[in-house]
Image 1 (cartoon, helix red, strand yellow):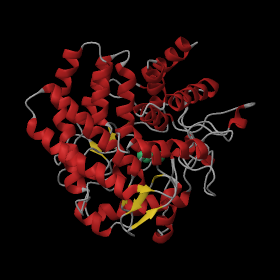
Image 2 (cartoon, protein in one colour; image 1 turned 90 degrees about the vertical axis):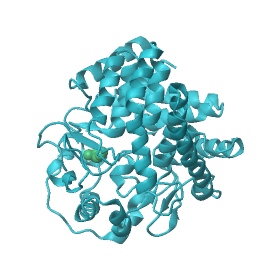
Image 3 (cartoon, helix red, strand yellow; image 1 turned 180 degrees about the vertical axis):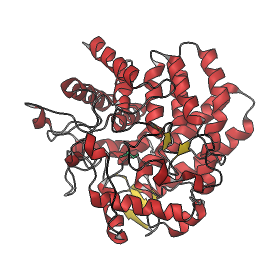
Amino acid sequence: MHKEIKQKAIDVLTRNWQGGFTIPCQGLYPFQWNWDSGFIAIGWAHFDIAKAKKEITTFLAAQWENGFLPHIVFHHETDTYFPGPDFHCAELHPKASKKYKTTGLTQPPVLGFVLKELYRIATDKKDILRFIKSNIDNVYNNHRYFYEQRDPHREGLVYIYHNWESGTDNSPMWDKIFETIDAPEYSFERRDTTHVDPAQRPSKREYDHYLYILNIAKKYRYDDEKIAQHSPFLVQDPLFNAVLIKSNEALIELYTLIGNEDEKIQTLSNWQNKAKHQYNEKLFDSDLGAYIHYDLKAEKPIEMLSSSSFTALFANIPDTKRAAVLKKVLQSKFGGQGYYLCASFDPANVNFNPKKYWRGPVWINLNWILYYGFKNYDFNTLAENIKNDSIELVKKVGFYEYFDPRKEMYKSNAVGYGGNNFSWTAALVIDLLNT
Ligand code: DGY
């Protein structure tokens, strides 16, 4: 039974391979996306390590001179995606990639821990370590970029300046910020809604806001210091920072394996100690019993729960006592009420929407992060529940981008949401089935 689903997952990745990189899915996302690419490489590593390596080197070839890694690499021309390279105009920044058109936004920095996963999965450890050795400095330079350019108060926590940088694009977390912005009504042609039911995608008004904050960054030629001064959207995101911290940890371990890299290990450890301390100090909300987002512009916490609130476990950030609190909160608020684990937003909140992208549906990449997170603290039963729910959802409806968390929806004619034959869903199912 599992053999069959694994083969189907391999077929999805094989179909989405473009001879150098993998698209997230046909039609909806026709280029290479940053964190997609990392998760996808983990899937490839289980059955075609050469493609896993190629996925990463292709992506890293688009790195900017200042270490920045973009959220999309536009490998070719197409008018089927909006906003495309002509809207983003990343070349406004003097250090943007000269080789590829990219965006001037980034995404959760998964590559550090992805390199470590490749090391775990690969059978030829010598060969993969050689590969890691020739690419790890690019990832290190990316972390340096974050701590030097995205942490204006030198707190150890980096900010995102756009919801598309969070990866959780239309989460209700951003609603209040957008209410204060009042963007103009732009006229533009959406492409996503020609591929996917608009009920499952962000609204036109949300897109106005997304374009408005992008235009501010463009006005300042993607200059980080100016963005920090002028962007109305500046958020310290618990998912983004947990991913960065997990990747710091992976880089420290990999540089130790490589040897003779004491200076970089020291710098990474300094970033890491400060980051973990401040994450615990600033982002933990003891009333909610979980970590929260912090609005750096308004200088106030955003007191709501989402699946991002628990991702600190993946990066070994909480102590065991706090980890037990997170487990209890996740189980009582996200599980056990007829919901599959794990809804992307608090099901009890009025803004929860079980169909709409990041406002409620289950996502396999977040489940994968939570699975390994709970395993880190030996909460093995809960980890297994998350894994089994992920596989069950895929078996019921297919390799979709996201899934309705309500169990009752699967009694008859169940459907998955967003793009179908979605690469990271396939890639991470392969990994979950192999652990
Ligand atoms: C989209 O087009 O919705 C992407 O998620 C942006 O990265």
